[in-house]
Image 1 (cartoon, rainbow, N blue to C red):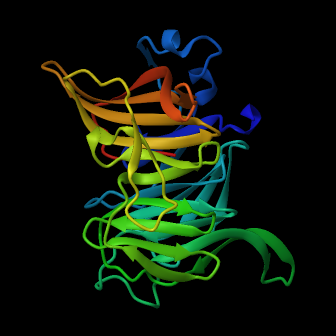
Image 2 (cartoon, rainbow, N blue to C red):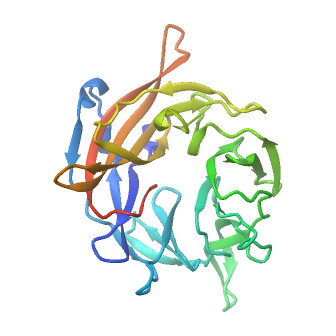
Image 3 (cartoon, one colour):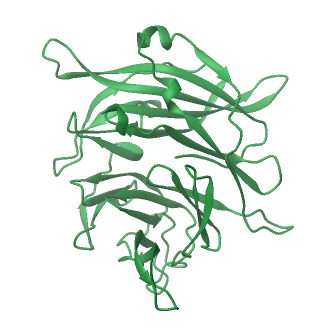
Length: 334
């Protein structure tokens, strides 16, 4: 079972040179130990950020900086897109770069989720000024056999436009894959919608919203979804999405709080496979003598507890703190 775990998590932050973004590979195998987790997690360890595996440059001008977005294809391929919709794929395992198809329309604030062998990309900037049927905001990226201009067939990536969502929200709060085929998407002002990837249709689930932030991950061992609560300081929580009403928060799994001077900026949850996760939390620190941003990566594991083994507890493994410097505006964790 452990052989199927993801080894690397990817951190993308502003690079040392102007208008660049550096991709760093964080080796999560170092975060889990055979020793007691209580002794491993006694303190957060400071560490140097690994050297960038790749540096990306976005189109920019003297008046504006370029914008790039990053999405994960499988476990080792990172799809990078810029503000024009052009794309490339970096294979971290091979340390190789390849071309990718241009998106049907540039994505200004994309959310993405994998369903089987497809990556679904939805632009959360939904408004009538930029959304049209000729420039869809929702598409799937697949690896398939295509015929080239020379008549030969190749295996390559392709983009497929999908039905435009029936909502116009600009703030997608939470989303998840349910039943292996449905993508649930929530907006605070419009409720929750579901897209059937097999039938290609949108339906409204209800006026309620999913109680988590970002993507929640399904763990078959517990038949539950795990995500970061949209309340309670984004605590690691468990949810049951099998019903037709607003899902309750079943478990709130406490983690260790940061020092008082650390101001939360953003949190990310990455499923490593099985019952293991990585929680990455970014903090701004404004001391009298310096300003900086810190990224704390923590290995987490969910275990059964209680006499009946039906309860859940979060086991915290190693935490590592990386100093990102004082000029970080762009960041994401994959």
